[in-house]
Image 1 (cartoon, helix red, strand yellow):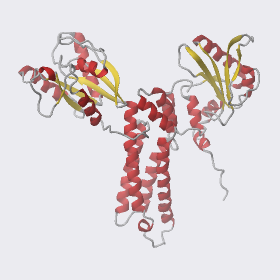
Image 2: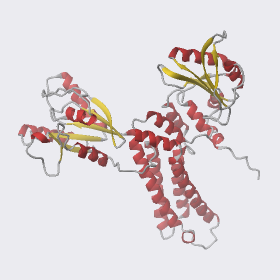
Image 3: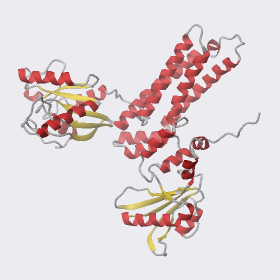
Image 4: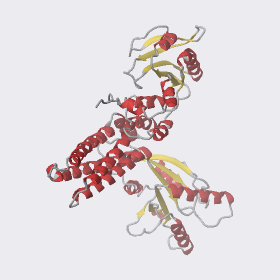
Length: 474
């Protein structure tokens, strides 16, 4: 039987797109690749198939591949716009896998717009158009230069808010996550092949699970997946951080704690109840993990101030969306009937699934604190480090090795689904009369979930969602 020629990875990915989308993908694209605003250098980047005519039009002649060339950039009339560097990367040895031309000029916004307009005018005959957000990286993915996890790492590296997150994103871009996922996929493929072979030859009276050591292989693969899942969860914390809300009655020290954690006077602190009327946010870091702290209006059931009522409503909205709620208790007021009654009302209204960390404040002004309670003083700094560690522990952060990679929530979810299918497969393998058809199906589902991480098996709408969040020019 004749077989179709095997498709390359990029061809398999492109096959999922309809003709209209494919036609748009065939058009060359251009964009300003540097951030808006003035700068020493600005870059205009072009990518597409067979860009040599554009190179001649914009640069006055051919360029030496991968070598910077100093030359004048001219407008349509031939007047010099600027003098800068041109870099030419012929396909497939480029970021996108297509021909890529980069024009590096002085970083004035008006100048870059003029240079962009010149490129669009010169490329009219080739169908040159403005790039969509993330389209350069999307083409790199479609052309097999990056897998999906690496492509996402490009955006994560740009958006990193801490040094640890940036280093981890760099490792993901280099393939740290992808290589571990691929290694697991390869092991699953080998096991699936054994199962499928046994299904094809049922007359062979061989205890497949015993002879092939399938149960041991499943245990080893599941253990490796658990390690990868733990690393992905840590990587997701590095990327997304922890959203922490400071909650409690008025004047329990929420704004003072925010200022102490941030090391700056961000929130106004006064003895007057209701000083904070709206949310105040600040991002800090603990051991490289971004901590998005929100100071909220003091919670109380009655107030005559309409603005404060709106602030309290927003406080409850923030609490509902928080990863962690720091419920602050004023040690100097504990035991007062009215204060304790209000504490009970707040506690009863907290979401049932909320992660609540009880923090007792004003330790320097109180005689004692409840035994075992987390207490602190923002004036002296006592207890602040213990609070930081308690926050990390509450969300599951722990010290990780130097090779930590960045990860996204979708990676964690895919690994969790793969793990569930592996657990089902192990249960089937341990059954007295193992149903091999069901075992094969669970292994396939586990394999497909892993494939979603690198994009070997991904829905088109997922790809569109991912790349639409990139910046233009990348």
